[in-house]
Image 1 (cartoon, rainbow, N blue to C red):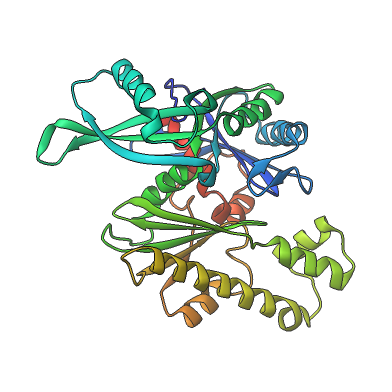
Image 2 (image 1 turned 90 degrees about the vertical axis):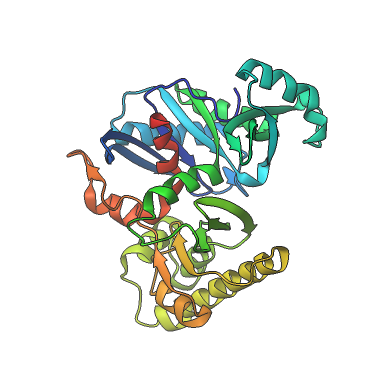
Length: 352
């Protein structure tokens, strides 16, 4: 199973995060997307650690539950490996090479591009287009990941009785969804946009420029820290704390004693990630910030971030403008929308 593999199948996306599994399938009419199936199931603690699947059986069970809740009958799934587990590089190759010839040449030259023996990795490529002013050459994106990173994704999918049609890269899936959202968010290609995907245990910064992700960085900080504090302070279970965090019902002291401190810490993480980006690149500013992930819409975070960072901030809503099948709970999917960047990008692979 290679990265980017695509057999033009009708498929659905499977996003495995540290706290939940989401499955989603799209249809498309003209340029308009429709969510046909959507399901989610929670994961036990430590089934996924730092974006790595550690308990395959539990992840397979959650995928099975999410698919059942969605009502989806299809078997072909697209899943992503974490960007931190993938090495990507754009190289130039002769434009007249066939895919088979490219694959053979890349296998021979792999030691120039990757730090692992070729027999230990899954390697794939995508021809991006001609080199400017050199039409006899093409830009070729190569991506590789250690085979065990790919194998565990396949094992989790197959353990749920499904077929792995595509292994994608998380940042590429998010890039595809971002491209779809640009018009609704009034974003221009020449703007430098910092997209923060705030998950349960990890916050990932994706810098989007000219329609592409040009920089990513993971930081170990996420919504689970707020959930843990709610559990400890108010004597709630993890499930109760997570529900209260999203739907309210906590004491009046919650905002001042718990939420304010969490928001301050998260904004510090956002500021720190931006400083790392500035110090590592030629850029020294961003034009906009987009907050995504399950934590993005909690407790006035966007307004506070804009106030403290001094950059316009928006919440990701990748299902905006999508039609919804009658079987979809429209309230639930809109609440979940900021956390659907990856799974929507995976579902879009049907239409490549």
